[in-house]
Structure formats: structure tokens, C-alpha cells
Length: 133
Image 1: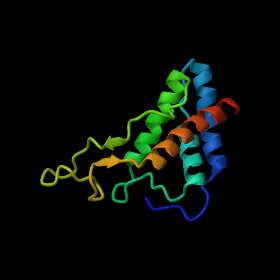
Image 2: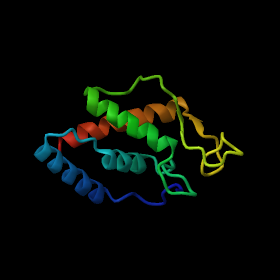
Image 3: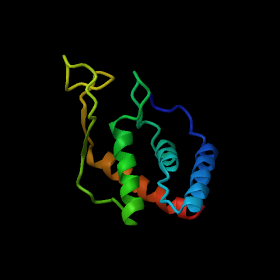
């Protein structure tokens, strides 16, 4: 819920991703390597916060990264260049302040181009790395 002070545990993400890949192969299911994408994001940009402080769930930025990984996995193409630049958390925490999220920040986040492109590239890089496992 705060910027990382050290690198995330890549081996743990790889272990989770390998497990999901083996299960996906056994079931004939598509695997979307979210733990790998999150680890790549946090390794390259520890300043990007991916969870809410107050409830620990993934925030809108993590939601955007996740959507980009799904796009990459489903369509087998890079999301780099997609113009979607905002995410709205659908959960209303307090009916008295319906436009605020769990941390008291706006439910709608508009990503700067540099962050949007970074998340898109990270998603595609995670798919490429997943294929090499």
C-alpha cells in the first residue's frame, strides 16, 4: 500500500506463475500471469503503489495493469498504444461521498501518458516472459 523500499520477491512470483501455468496446461485453460506482471512493475517502478492503504485490495493502477495483461493474453498482442487512460473503481465505500475510494482519493484515476505506457509495456513484457518460462 506504499512505495516499495526494496525489490519484490521475483522467485515467489515465478513459483506462483509456474504453478498456474502447469494447472492451465492440465486444464487446457488460458493463464494470465498477473503475479509476474505485478513483480515486473514493482521491480522497475517501486514508486507505483498497487493497493489501497485502507483495505489492502488492488487499486485502480493495479486494475489497469491487470486489464492490460488480460488484453495481451487474450489477443496475443501488445496493449501499447491503447488510448484508455482512466480507471474508475466501481465500489462506493461511503454513500455520503460516492466519488471517493477506500483511501479518500477519487474513485476515478486518470493515468499520465508515461505511466499508462509503462503499464502497457510491463503487461506485454510479462506475457513475453511467461512464454519463456
